[in-house]
Length: 114
Length: 117
Image 1 (cartoon, each protein chain N blue to C red):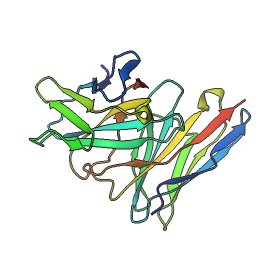
Image 2: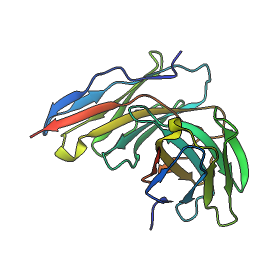
Image 3: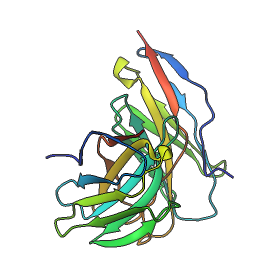
């Protein structure tokens, strides 16, 4: 079975632009979470979605938004890009999003903002 | 205060030997989970092992075991019989809260492990 897939793998944008990152969860998984990993740090939680509803939000500005579709795939949108948004964006999926679930990660999207 | 602390500098281990990667955590919740992930240079976070706060036995998954000491709030990862492919960054993470709450993971800063032939 396919794991978590993310697209694109790499992306280069300029300041002020908008970006959309996509994630397809493991088949049967209904929860998707997004994390930002800046170079040299551990991932930071951005959002969690379950059954198309936002279940959790991290300490990120309103420029960051996300949604989940009926097929459980998800998009992360970032508006008005800043240089500091350059990072690896990781998507993780889990069966139900409940506390005992294991989150499985994709390979990430590397975003560079110039 | 940091919720997950990984303070070891880069770790080195000889192939086929065992290595322990340290992790301490801070939480006031009674129910929580502890995870270890491996991140090779490709970037993907690979799940290794999970320990629930109410689990009485230390978790084991193949060559990986978790040395869970609840009173000391430590959850060290032990890798036995190291292989060259074990060279990577290793992250300890915690999920706090009750069942049904969101499953946000809080990660440490990671530890670099290098396996020498």
